[in-house]
Length: 175
Length: 330
Length: 134
Image 1 (cartoon, rainbow over the protein chains, first blue to last red):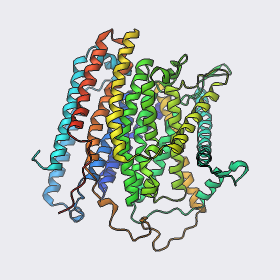
Image 2 (cartoon, chains in turn red, cyan, blue):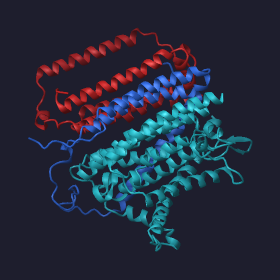
Image 3 (cartoon, each protein chain N blue to C red):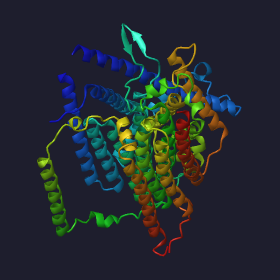
Image 4 (tube, helix red, strand yellow):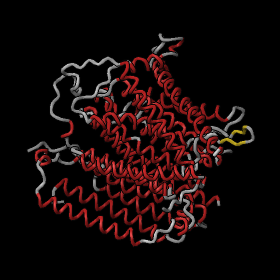
């Protein structure tokens, strides 16, 4: 069985590399569209990690929602929005911004690290047991039927809110 | 360890067979399309290379291989090179889960005629179909040409209008067969194909996959008389060929999806199961070519309005009707 | 490290992985082969984007498209998340008894349909012409 084990470990590190490569591409990109591509590659790695953790449903939903939809929405946003000022991009950012960015990064990673170190990591299977999509649906229909309906209200509000905000930009604030 | 070796050999054999079949089928699909379209327009179509033009795909391949491989100066080089590979890759990957025949018994081992029977195979296909737009959209964007960009944008717009209808049409099938596994869905259609059980879902699905395949009533991304060649305007040689192959492989994928979900998969009397599967795919492909020879192209605002104002509400309604029907039937 | 994958899982993985590798190899091989055969002939205008033989006018990346595309995309985003919830519910639909499941589905879909009705009524699906600049 060790063969499978090695394979799993190798794939795990493959996904990690994928995530970091995507992040790197995203950061180094000159064109916004390349950043979106980097984000997509990064999310591909995340989807792989979900699969690795034993939830193929989440992995595919990551592909479907985050890569298939969110990135496409961002791409539309780029094509619809104004072109960023090329000259401004080439100028090095002011020193204060750099300090702020570094501070934010450090704070975020410290927070993450603290969480990682303080969480008891149980294998996911041991926690719940049944991970099948059928079980998920069952619990949505029986145990969590109120949240299930609330989700639709949440989505409705999200759509309407997004449309209102986008259309205010379109017609000015008079509507 | 021996078992591992055997498994790997089995994977390789299956992969080779499936990939070989699919790619050669795609090549001959091109020929078939040209022939059938020509006949519909009272022409002969390709008939010079080999008997009945049967060697035409080979000639095309050699021609494409010998063409100059251009990358426009202003293009985003890496993305430009990546895009055709994504286009072919996502199309080919879909075949990993499609069951193309009844399980075989060889040497006392049962061999499933599917490369890997994921228990969420349907979701896998659905996710891949939403990724397929990346090849087209990135190709169109990376060329930095206006025609190509318009083509890529239209491809994305089309995807967001029809992906939803596709998903909504799948839901009733899943409700009836209680599984996302494609083999289970095929098995549930032994007595009656889903096309008869869920006619409305079938109709929505056919229209949605036609839009997904970017074929004629919905071929906005490459509308040749307004956008030159749309997203692959700047592509030449084998890269163009890859987009082309990707498109036809995609046609076969969608044909198999339709077959598996609605036309009863490999079930059928008399003939071996793989034979039935092939016949059904080819029938679907012929239908697509027929539509291409008959129906004019939509305008893109009509196309998006059709998706959102008709297909999506119908799809939602259909789910409710199916729910009531399942309840009534008990 | 908590490896929680089962063997079957890994096998599925392997199939898909091998498929990806073979696909990539096929994609790269074609381009490499064509490199060997294709004649390079770079002329002064070879690298320019095609614009019907005229000199290219401006860059394609600066074009701003109609915002309606974006509005459609936003609605699509929310609806796709809705499908994400409909899928598991559809699989387990036979486990609820009687009217309850139907009522739950009716509520869920009914509320969501309001989004389309809202967008329709507010004219999101109507394409407006861009006002000429200035």
